[in-house]
Image (cartoon, rainbow, N blue to C red; front, side, top):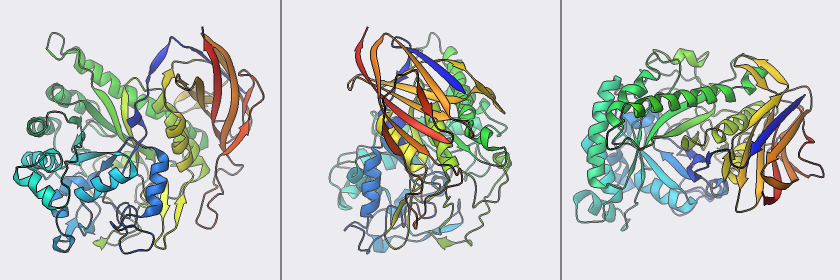
Length: 517
């Protein structure tokens, strides 16, 4: 089985923004408590932040981390999570039917984000929250001093403003399960007024409109068109979410779900193009709205009573199998990922690269313990799950300019149509004079051959290949066997038209470039 990808230096999809490799953490399960924050433990620092987690997150070199939700944010009052911890009250958390202790809040998150070297991206509550509260949160975070909320931040221990640049105007507001669920027009009206007030406080901030989340919802895409007619002048991004589930459709269809994400993103791109076309002649008709894919991952719903994603339509609550109602940070949604899941995540990353012309922010959801690449236990151990590795390699090597491919060769028949046996994306790193090829072999029985043709590049020499593979697609990393599925690196002594990819594999191939014609 063969796939041939042909590239030309002059045909470029777009530059990769550093925020494309980002993540998300929510007050859900053990994502915050026991993940980021575990006070009075030998493995945590003086602020209660787990030191092992800080190191693992730094290693990922993330752009932004989205916080505090997620479904959580639509019934969250940020004012409950500031000030002396002994004075913070416990509250009912309705999204996930648990108790929120409020021992970790906006100051704690911004302090932690600074320590791990990422920018915070903060979601405001546009469900049960008010537009005034959203503006006050911007004031608390970004205004220097001399007002009630900025002076309270100083009193709470942070003299300098946090200068949070990226703000999400709510979360999944078109979903019935969301607290404060609204129609598209209701959301557009509220988000517009919130955006105005938030930018009155700080005109430099960048805003993310809450776009269509999932394809099975009856308002899909019409929601985007409706809200963007109102919000186009006020926002910089539109969000969308995408989870892929291995729900009995077969291994090949699950591996090829990168194509589902590709279709999903192009639908959002088309909706944006449509709304922009309506603004011809207006003062902002040259403005481009970018996509913020602020939740994406493989999510097999191992802990939710849900047969497939279509069941989300009309759902108003989630029923969990591993926790009773009203527990404090219960260990829920702690997915255990296999090699197959990791290969699929790698394929989704390839799609993100191949849509770099529209995507500026993409957040793997989530970062810690909850549907996450990193898992911790109560004893101070940290596990890198299988999906950690493709994400880490994408973040490390997926920097530069994505080239537009022309693809030929053998195909596989899938639910998404006939697809090339190898899914690939190629990044040109001008600073390092390197080409970096990300490739998924979707043939689970045979080695596949990847042939690369590069026009306008001279002396392209493959130097090394980093491979994630195993004979067993069900193989997982565990605390007892943490290195069951890890990448291996080999030096290459071949040409670019004779690269081989083992079955069950996802690879990064690094090539040196002598010169450009």
